[in-house]
Amino acid sequence: MSENTSRPVKTYHSLWVKISHWVGTLGFLLLVFSGVEIIMVHPRLYWGNAGNDLMPALFEFPISRNYHHGGWAPAQAIFDQPNSPISAGRTYDIFNQNGWGRSLHFLAAWIMVFSGVYYLVIAIFSGHIKNNLIPRLKELTFETFVKEIKEHLKSSIAYLKGPQYGLLQKLSYLMVIFILLPTIALTGLTMSPAITASYPFLLTIFFGAQSARTIHFFAAVLLVLFLLIHIWMIVKSGFKKQLLAMTIKK
Amino acid sequence: MEKKNIITRRTALITGVSAMGSLLLGGCSKPTPPTYGHLLRMGDIFTYEAQRSLLNVRALSKEYSRADISSFPATGSINPSDASLPGFSKDYELLHRNNFAHWKLSIEGLVARPASYSMDDLQKFKSRTQITRHTCEEGWSAIGEWTGVPLGVVLDHAGIMPKARFVTFYSYDDYNQSFDMIDAFHPQTILAYGMNGKNLPIQHGAPIRVRMETQIGGQSIKYLKRIVVTENFVDTNKNGDNGWAWYMGI
Image 1 (tube, chains in turn yellow, brown):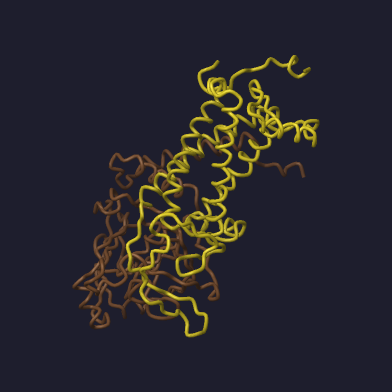
Image 2: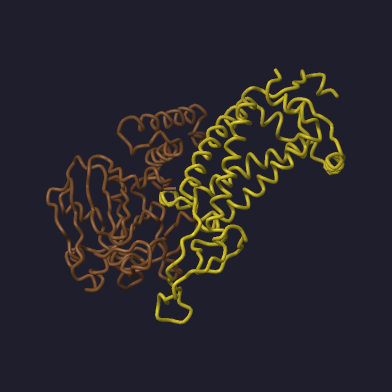
């Protein structure tokens, strides 16, 4: 209670939070849309540096007609030795919309980068991260965890005014901002042959270009999961009030 | 020990702002390939300028060991001498019948000594062998060993003129592709006649294909026929408005 009376309570988000939130939302949705298109062109994931239709996959998604399309010319061994890698020609035109898919993905990534940098610079220097997102020591207790998880499972949760976030909320925002988004950005860059020529350490820290692609995919899945829970919590805590606070409310 | 913290907030901000400025200036100081007023093409050019400004353009792509050589799919056109397959070429079929004995590579445009180079001529230059990762825009990758002559060596031999800004490649399977001078003269950009210790197989682009290791695999054009050096971008409407970005370093 003392915190609530010592500081005036804001019932809306700052303008810079609103701008970066919605510009980032636009970028994120475009990335998911184009990302789904890109994975459909080659719906197989691998580990390491090399991975293709002639090699076993780690995961294979039964989506798009590129999944198990067949259509390969007889394979030839590359070396005259047992278990040699092989080469084979693909005799089948695959479904491929990567031309626009890739260009849209990178354009959307720039939108994310600009809104992300804009958010981070202000969030760090204004103290938003320190004051509103990093949990207080006294918050970090087992009891708070249990209490908040119970509250989140109820049909409606309390509407927290302004940026006075709950513990689970703070931790999930921090995870998105400082773990998932940097991971997905860096693994994305690791798939670029020009960038890894200049920064080969990226291939080392993500165990290779194909591993980076696999990590990129799972980070995207976690971010979409975050988005769904985020929307669910907005609905449970008062959709209209929350939407106004992130848009026109001053 | 206090001097350790050399990146202050101020220098970080100034560096960031000036880096952004140089990106924008870079976009104005020299003409770039047309965008057709297309938002995605504008994004592609922005990415191209950003990579040119922020990366070490002479950095070598990672080279692997022989043990890393992997299975290697051949995609796109896989035999231009087969009339039943896409990419068929009567000229190529005739060359193939003679085991490419009459094959010659024509180098034209802004060079002091335009000429046709036979395979013997090209193999007289000092060769370069590199084991690199082919990154397909579809999402897969494969590692192979390539032997050939650096394109820059051949262009210098033909006497490249100072006005030259683009190098355009034409292939027998009716495909074309261009690089700026930076990528044309990258040390790993080679005219490859060998793959994995043997002559380049038909399905991988015999008798000679381009290997360009800091761009996506599709830029390494197969079945090479002709190289034209120009000052202006050669707009064949094949790479500009058909959905594929001109530059694919990412």
